[in-house]
Image (cartoon, rainbow, N blue to C red; front, top):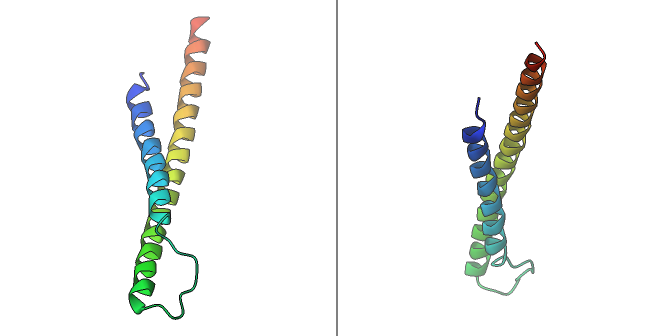
Length: 92
């Protein structure tokens, strides 16, 4: 059994996680951590939008990271199991 298609799928998921990390860095550069008491309301709305976008990116980033980790673990275990089964049939 070839694990290439499964490895390619895992690679795509891992690359999506890396892309989300990069995208989060770009969006986080727009974030302003200071409190603007005397500034117009539009600044608060803009920062609320950035915060909401970061929350969404974090949600998807955590989900994809968990999926990539679990899928990678399962893929690794399947590969080890297949290697073990093939190794035990060589001597028979």
